[in-house]
Image 1 (cartoon, rainbow, N blue to C red):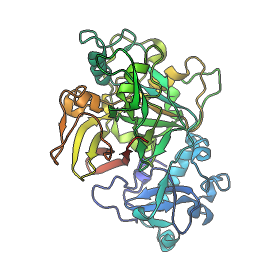
Image 2 (image 1 turned 180 degrees about the horizontal axis):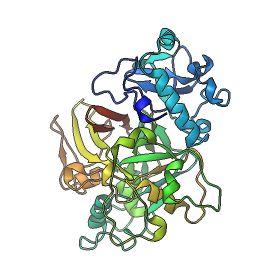
Image 3 (image 1 turned 60 degrees about the vertical axis):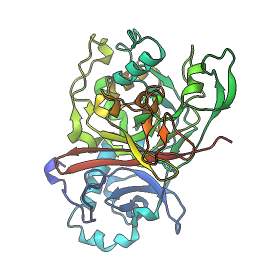
Length: 420
Ligand code: CA
């Protein structure tokens, strides 16, 4: 099917400024009060579409999908079918939900659910989680604060998409509360560490990509094949305890300051939906090694924002950034990750690293926004924030826009609970 055949509108009503027009069709896993079995879904406007029921009504029969593929707890088996199958499914779904499907529309009560009446679950069984560090503005800001203002970037940074292996077990879906972590930290000017609740709890504004088909152990994924393995993207909040992190990270990197929680948005936006928003990445100088070279537009213009909502209800948008600022793109990250023969598996998540733009209003963490607490954010209820307080809810949102077309990610939110 070429682009000309694609329906421009759905028979499902889509409110103006919705994140979910028919051109999006993200994937999720949901359940309802009347049917608590998790199953796969997409969303158009404010209506969640039950894919398991559409499958049982035989609307997908022409694709010969494995039986029950949408009636599973996670999307992994569907993602593992590979890009040609999932892209064909997406095209069929777009036709079915496009204008003029009177027969299907007459059956809508079987498979449509108002979005505010469903519970969205973690959509992926995450095998491994890797976090990169690919925003030059973020790496520069952190380097200035923690090391050397004159030589903020370490010598390897422009040669390697720096990353570390995170923890998959603590990845939670939007809406899950996050407990303030406890740990060891070295107070300013102290000689001995103390133990207690983190005082410098922070968010990190990131995007994560999910692996569809992986690669065999011992093989690599080249930059020009990388997108065959990237199923889609989600919003990603990599919660961070700066005081724990600062004391523990030498010499092996992040550990307990990071692995207590990361939150993801419930919708996975397929890479195909982001085609219109490709942009050229920044010029990479010095020249990268051959295995990191790439062709074409591999960055994406996705507007991002972070809002803090206090327990009082007072709220402030503290950052407006953009995914296009990434120095290293996803294809380079995946090529680097696998160049040594490391195997990626279906459901693995790679996160971008904190996405900071060029100025303070676009920084992707409180660490940078308040410059280590020296420039607090004023909240409309008269309080101020250096880092996050108990009762604060952090909400991240993202969308790409071009003319009338808006492809959104919804949001990822999490409320801070006091330490136990
Ligand atoms: Ca991070």
